[in-house]
Image (tube, rainbow, N blue to C red):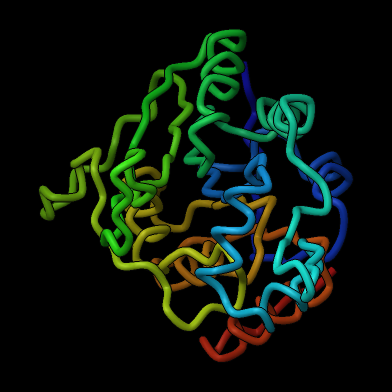
Length: 250
């Protein structure tokens, strides 16, 4: 029988997410909403560079960019081992496994395999973004994937907005970004509304610029946000302060 622990306050942590997660109390998290690194190739890294300002890419600390060749590359990929390393820590933390995870198309089978090994259920949602470029040699890249990994007993909340239950999500991307892969607050809020109780605790171990924490704060949930990049941690801190939040920082 699980004895649930209570997290009384929201926290931002600057540091390695595996170390922080290892120190969090067992069975204390209601929901994970997170956007881990994708396993970038040269091609899609270059695509992201073209869609994001040079200034943001160069300052992010995530990419190397060569001004002469106009090529960029991810400093480190995010392999199956990396995915398993952080996911393996979640069963100890979750009251019931309940997670929404953004990922690349190539990573979907890895998350599905992990779910099967841990006897969890698995579903795929698609964030469809406006189509801006059409290539007649391949399918368009106007979709991102979100996997939901969950246990029995995590039924979706009953909301008046029936559109929330659609597996295909329609939100415009963030135009003025603080992070190369920043997601809309409304998108993160959708998952939090659907899959967490009021006053519950939402974990984002890859916090980035703080969007998940902002969505949780606005919806009356507590949040645990972890970010190891100093620049993005400071951005998340500043964004939350603008929300009127009195932060507890670690």
